[in-house]
Image (tube, rainbow, N blue to C red):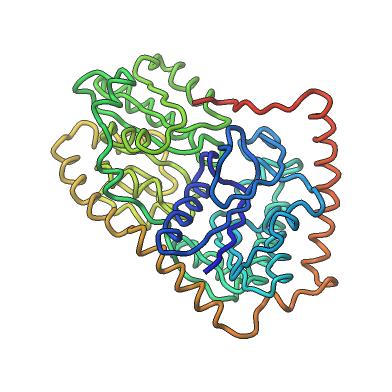
Length: 430
């Protein structure tokens, strides 16, 4: 099968969607399928990539760590010319999402959309953030989903949400798979030595993109309270993003700099070793749609303390493999749950064993096969939704309106970049 994956985020970008796409790409290829990835340029993009088409993009859009494509007419059409495509898979409803919609229609092939994200929780990255804008984003993502032939939801929680919002096309729940053996084999002691973590210290850790929507200021304040109450506990933070400095300032303001260890962005074996260097994994996001990092943390042997929200509730079993706190829990309650695990090695060992069992439920190969089966089912179905798209439809009209505004904004940004020089260095280097 020839699969075209279109995504607004991809490696070397740090984030759940980028890692999810890369995981499925690798596993599809292992199963014998050809996968072409269409994604924006990012700083430090590898020069040689297998079947990846990079689209020119604005870097670090509006203070975020995202790249967004520049509208260059005909660029993508020329890049894809002559390539056979059996199915198009969009990973976002906007930007390259509308390109996926048009490509599917032009080629007469099905379009599948993975609804990775609760997009209304990311509107702070664009000007004029407001409740009406959030409602508009929900409406647009729902309409986009209904123009596709099928939708993949990464969790049952997310599937229920989008059904309630009005998604009518077939929905399949397919979580991103986790390589259990890989994360279990990290070099715990080597990473601890590198980060100068004292021997015998208990380590609370977090891995992820360091951004506002991840509720990381709450997490940092909760961790700080736990560290102040437990002198032998240290905090290891892994990731990169726009609020790295704010997190550091919270720990520093509490006099905890010597027990705060920032590892920056880590990938591959270094990421596995970072997970293994931890004893407890802290997670406070309310914007997740799947708990990939939680499954990875558990594969490395870490019980988890998380807030009860979509994504987390599919992975964390309260009192079994960690603690799942009520979504209204305050920082003190979060700190106490972390402290309960940090202070009790016997409880950690008991939960560690159950965490390993949970992680085994997230097999990469099983997820890939399930997604491929959904592709095949979608390809076999009659009455493809994308063939019903018309240029005078509501969605097409709004897309044209958005595109006109976007072209204007992108043109201004490109003018600034041309004047002052292209900035390609990451704000938060490894």
